[in-house]
Length: 466
Image (cartoon, rainbow, N blue to C red; front, side, top):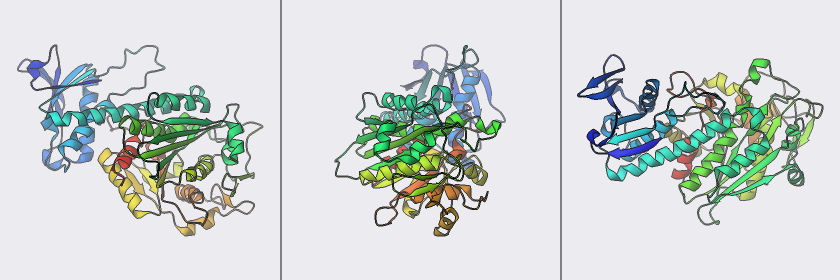
C-alpha cells in the first residue's frame, strides 16, 4: 500500500473514494459533489476513545476493501478527537500503523485471488509536513507486524525449525543484525537438554536462533527478547484432541514476534542494544519423544520433572532464559503462546503479563495501551512455587497435583526459576502469555488468522525504555 500526501482532493488523478467521518445511522457510499464518498459512521465525538479510534481507522480500510476501492482519500484532521488525549505525532503513527494493519490478508495458499481486494493507494489530506514521517513510521511498524502474521499463518509443514531459522536471516537481510543458528550438536555443547528433549520426537532438527543488534555502546546492557518457537505442537505423548491440533502451526508466534521486533528496531536504527533468542522445535509424538515422568537437566543445571509433554513451551524457554543471562541483560522479556489457561482467565482481548517488577509492568502496560496490544497482570506469588516442586526433579512442568486451576500462573512461576542469577536474585524480567491474542476475533476489523502480537508493544517499549 502506497501512502501519498496531498493538499487537495482535486490534485488526485483518477477515481478515488473519499472517506468522511460522521455520525449518521449507517455506513453508506454516495456521490457528493461529483466525488464518490464513503460516509463512515462513528460514535459522537465526545464518546470517542483511543480504543475506538483504532477500530475506526481499520473500519475505513475494511469498508473500502469491501467495495473493492483501490484508492482512498481522507482528511487527517477528521481523526482528531478532543477526548482522545494524544499528540498529533502519536495520531500520525497510529494512523500509519492501523492502515496497513487492516489492509493485510494471508493469500499465499489461494490459487485464485479474486475473492480478495486491497487498498493500493491512500491519499492523506491536510497533514503538516513534519507529521508525514510519523505516518511512514507507522506503516513501517505495520509492515513488520504483517510479516510476523505471515510467518505464524504458514502451515507447520512449511514452517519447520530450519525454515524458521532461515526466515530469521531473511528478516534482517541488509540490516545491522548478526544472526547465529545453533543446531543440535551446538546445543549439546551448551547443555541445552531442555530444548533437545522436547525436539527429540521430531524428524526435524531443533534450532536455537540468536539475533543481536548493537545500536549503541556494548557497555550498555541489552534488552533481551525471548520468543517461543514451537513450529508445530502435537502435545507429544500427551497428544492433543483433534480439534486442539488445528492452529498449532501458530505456536511459534512468540518467536516470530521477537524476530520482527528486532528487525524493526534495526530498520529504525534505535540507539539501543537488543537481543532476540528463539528456541525452535517441533513437539511430535513418536518412539523418540520425551515421556511423562522423564527428568530433564536444563542448561541451568536445574532438573525438570515432565508431568505433561504438552507443557513443552516453558521447557524450551527455560534453556533460552538461562542463555539470555550470558548478555548480562538490563531486562528480559519472554513472549509465548504458553497456556490455554490465559485464554480462560482473560478471554481474547488482552495478553497476560507476569513480573515481580511493578515499574516494568507499568511500562509494558503503557506501551500496550498506546499501541492497542493490551496487557492484564496476573499473580505470580512465592506461594505458587510449592505447586511446581518436583518429587523426582527440582521442578515439575505443570502443577504437581494435576490441578486444572491457575495454569497460566504455574507456567509463569516455572519460568521464574530460570531467571535467577547465581545468588538466587530474580533478574528484571517479564513474561507475556500471548495465547489469548494469537489470532484476531470478530469485530476487530482485521483479517482472520494471526495477529502479529506483540510486535507493536515490544517496539514501543524498547523505543521508550530508559
